[in-house]
Length: 376
Image (tube, rainbow, N blue to C red; front, side, top):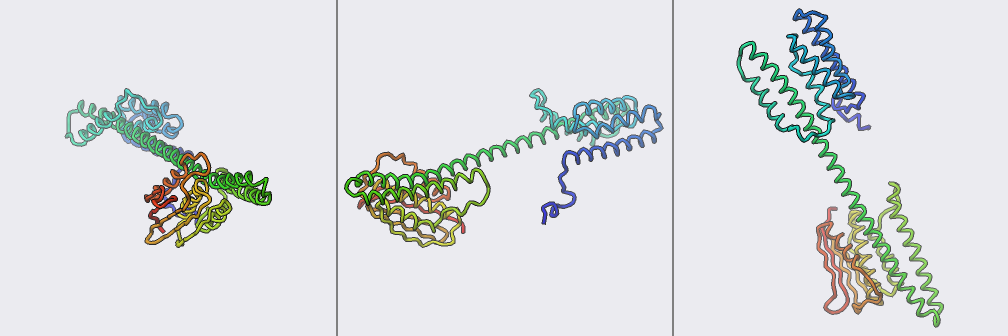
């Protein structure tokens, strides 16, 4: 069913042409009312008809030319008041003033809050003050007209400010979403590149050392480098493709991909023992679990190979725990490392409001522990 079919008939949002059409209908109706009042009062048609038309008909185009329409309607309404004709208390002028207040730039010398407060006070006073003399009544009617104009101006400025705040909030949220997406992509790229490049670096080092004496083993290392680089390139293309299209590019990595990580680590001299007891996890949780385990294994390959590594993943009571430990010597095999891997793991855990620790084990080796809640 289309969304428009579910919308109530009186809640339809009009486009600009539709709103101008409504203004035109209101202008014609209002002009007819003024003409009727003028005829009922016995005023001359030579004066009443032009002033009624000048006060009502321009309202049809108030959205197209706000300032000229307001000036014309205000002049006609003021002339009607001065000539003693049936007067509308500047209602038409207030109707024309609203789009002016809505579209004109803010002027610092216009105290809109003060205008609104004074208008409300005058309208309240006009509704409560009792009968007065003729001159006082004429003055009161004129002041009441000014109050109506002030109320229209205040309403238009308030709506303008509200729309500006809404647009600012929308831009801020959009900027934040872009920043978050950039951070996510940077984290994903780091995880993919760091893991694959570490394996390639280790195998390249092995190939260099054994090539003169054991060319067969060097050839095996080159095959591992070829396979890992191809896989890494495919995953990077998959990730970067998200920036270019909304098409479904396949499922995100999850628990099912952990055995592949273990196989790749074994190629680099790290034997991984997987112990996974988790199922039915949300896709985002599975992706975070995969990336945390991936980065932890990468750290073992970079800093402790050859070594044994144990990966334990448990889910229960809407809480997931991840423990990755190794029995390596704790000394770095490869130079470099800026700590972004641990930062990325910590950010993923903190995103779910969990706990993260990482550091050397008392008995040797290194341990990474993460635990966070999740909603199934």
